[in-house]
Length: 138
Image 1 (tube, rainbow, N blue to C red):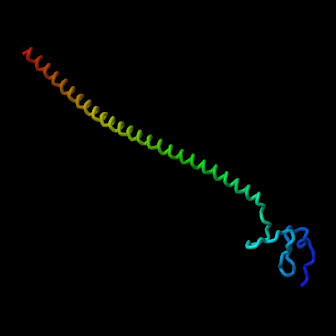
Image 2: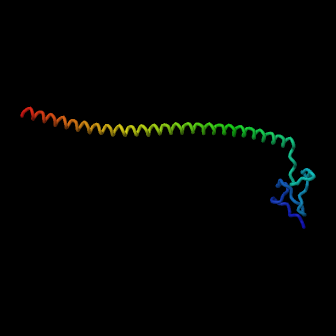
Image 3: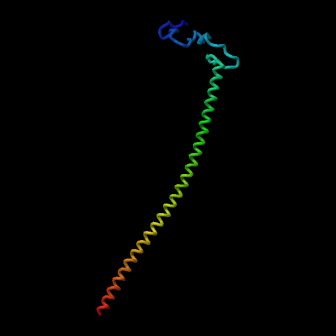
């Protein structure tokens, strides 16, 4: 079987990855030799210094995120505490307002009764004056 002719679609200088030969195998040029016991996927092994740097950065990121999480937990606890205090204050104010409304209702009822008593007493006073007036002329 012959290789396809070099065209712009099949030109090896255009492609960045190696082209398989006639048997489907990729040439090993530019790759490290596989380490015994590891799976070789055709990628070079990362540099240990780079890996150490990545691990160090991930550790620092984890530390920062843990600190941020702890701060958020504290803030949440404070917010929950403040919420409980505000709820207690609201409950107390609601009870006071309810009590004040009851007292206001009682005071209005008493005021209305007092007004009715005043009207009755004025009527009796007028009636007594009329009686006294008619007795004095009789």
